[in-house]
Image 1 (cartoon, rainbow, N blue to C red):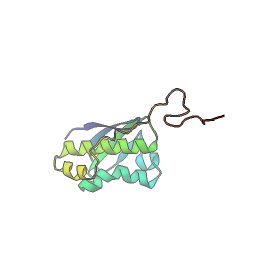
Image 2 (cartoon, rainbow, N blue to C red; image 1 turned 180 degrees about the vertical axis):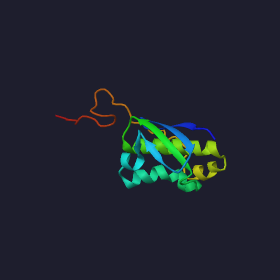
Image 3 (cartoon, helix red, strand yellow; image 1 turned 90 degrees about the vertical axis):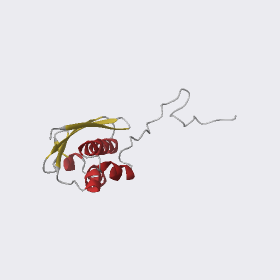
Image 4 (cartoon, rainbow, N blue to C red; image 1 turned 30 degrees about the vertical axis):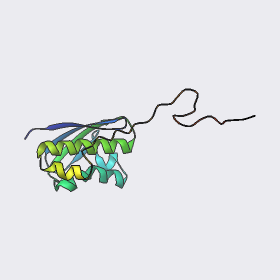
Length: 128
């Protein structure tokens, strides 16, 4: 089986995921994912698609991720891995879909509006 290449996005983070059959090594930007994401919650997010499909330790994953913060990057990687596992076997789709891992989260930062300090916040109003 050749390399499966997928894309995952979340907020402004973009993750290019390369899935190959292997021993379960996950490399993010040439570092081990546990080193790249020292927080347990983010490590769990990356492992989640494998745990749901019982494929832990069957595939090596290489990821290039750019943009966004650490949470957005972890969720972008999760989407990329989910899409790759669906390409491997269509049987994985219902399992991942049920947990909501196949959906691209469309929520983005709202733009700042003129005459306001932030997107929705207004400057303090003074009646007198």
